[in-house]
Amino acid sequence: MTESIEIPASHRRVRVWFGHTTIADHIADVDHAAQYEEAMRRRFASLRVTSEPVLVDAVGAPERSR
Image 1 (cartoon, rainbow, N blue to C red):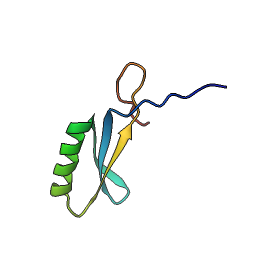
Image 2: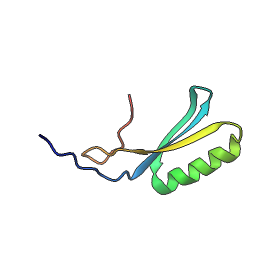
Image 3: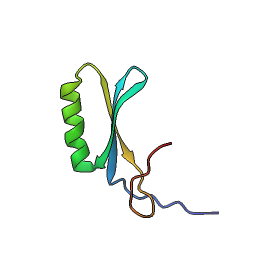
């Protein structure tokens, strides 16, 4: 049995969606991601904007989904 250690996400992934298609995808630290999300919500008011935590791998780089 292995233990899983949860590491708090220090980065967030902000995406702008046009239907089911991502038209913008940005990963940044929490503060910059919040600013980016706010800017995208203003610019694309009619589109869906999501912000989700990103897991950080052992070397500290954000893990991108494949």
